[in-house]
Picture (cartoon, rainbow, N blue to C red):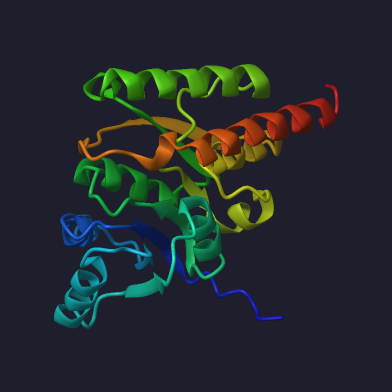
Length: 242
């Protein structure tokens, strides 16, 4: 069995990418802009999930232009899904903390910087909520609000938002992960952490909304979320009574 990597960096940025040729280099630039002002050590692991555009070529070109930067590319020959890539990349991470930064450059530099500053804290996870949810289309708002409502009701935890880019201690991801790789993988990790009495903090963040259609509303993701609701309900029923 291969030994786990040594966590000798402060943070690993997991950057999922699928058909993000328009934004992926701007995502790298945002991270570099922020990290150039901070003392924390870091790495970027970008996972291209079977893109059909020129995203891989853009990433490879960026790496060639910046040979000293800590960027690693993993190119999947086919689409495996965000949850799968998130968890698989955590196994490779050398950062004590782990943060997903989407390849469409939707996280503002100010919000990214705030996340990174918490790598000097003892929080197990820093959970974000969105300041400007109302800027999203009404249908997306309703889906997010419905998911949050049902996840609160089923889990018993009154978290503001369950699906943002959570800053986790990497070792906790390995410990808390379940077998889900679907849309609700992040919510499951949060709930596992809360059940484990994790030290946590909620923060407000600013994001940039892109109008491209989301894959979050496909049937397979709806079924995956339903399974997650049932899984969380089972965890709650099995939890020791206070």
